[in-house]
Image (cartoon, rainbow, N blue to C red):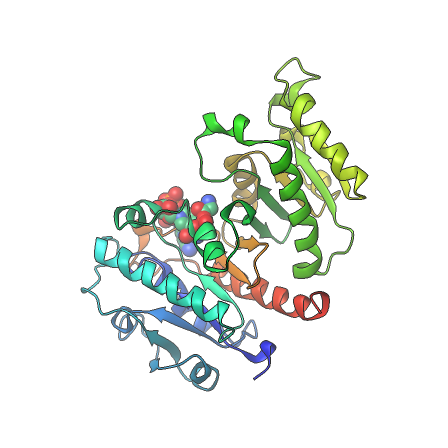
Length: 334
Ligand SMILES: NC(=O)C1=CN([C@@H]2O[C@H](COP(=O)(O)OP(=O)(O)OC[C@H]3O[C@@H](n4cnc5c(N)ncnc54)[C@H](O)[C@@H]3O)[C@@H](O)[C@H]2O)C=CC1
Ligand SMILES: NCC(=O)COP(=O)(O)O
């Protein structure tokens, strides 16, 4: 079986959240977006007779390719308690973690073409011993990539962003936004734009940290002392890069048309514009991995789980982005 034909694996995420529902809705939409075959790693009971679609138990990934047309294939990896939708439990968090572990391993071993991770609750995972800021760092480590080299990117049809620091308190951002971090994240971004999206010589924008990008050192000096020297070093390497730009004026439509990806000093600076524009079709992708890993941009949405109103478009977009990356890597990685 060639890499292009391998099914994708979706880790079930927190079973009490909307993950299983959007996976089932995505399966229903499979013909409308010409989906690659996929299967879920999770507890079969969380899918069987729950969402009104046919499901089938499989024992290995290759079976998914043939089963996919008629039913949602489920690789049963966890015997857990009965799930009550909208009521997260520690058992559900264990299931989510187990699914993430198995799904990452299957992608790493080459049994699947990509891994798509359904939403987990970080606070629930922390309660069962998860010691990573998020799935990004977990998957990276399982791939043998140091967590500092795992790069979180979120993308939608009109914007791609990278938060250069991710799940840390805001007060820690200035000290963690170092010359080396900016250079490493930007180089990863440039390489990833080509190998995942086929964009050669990508246009990169970097947001300043302070209001008005520091107003020439009057509203903060990180731009002058740290960011500009890092950008100069990147320009010397030949990267097509602009910044530090005032963050408040770089996300309107005309400004977005000037770059292929924006790097921002901290999480919300990147994710607020992305989720404002693309909450329902945004995708989270981990850059710098030997495997392709994507995820919907939204979370577990416990508040609406079980109401049959969860929107599956972000999951569909995650599968589409993974397929795009897999096919571009065939060209650019070889
Ligand atoms: N990829 C992942 O695994 C992510 C996980 N999370 C986790 O999710 C948990 C909840 O986070 P929140 O900040 O509440 O964000 P959230 O994205 O779960 O929910 C925010 C709001 O959007 C709505 N919403 C989310 N997805 C929706 C969908 N598909 N269709 C319709 N409405 C939807 C929810 O009902 C809620 O009102 C947290 O524990 C967080 O750690 C958050 C972001 C990403
Ligand atoms: N805010 C993005 C997010 O929480 C996703 O993180 P990860 O679990 O994919 O690392």
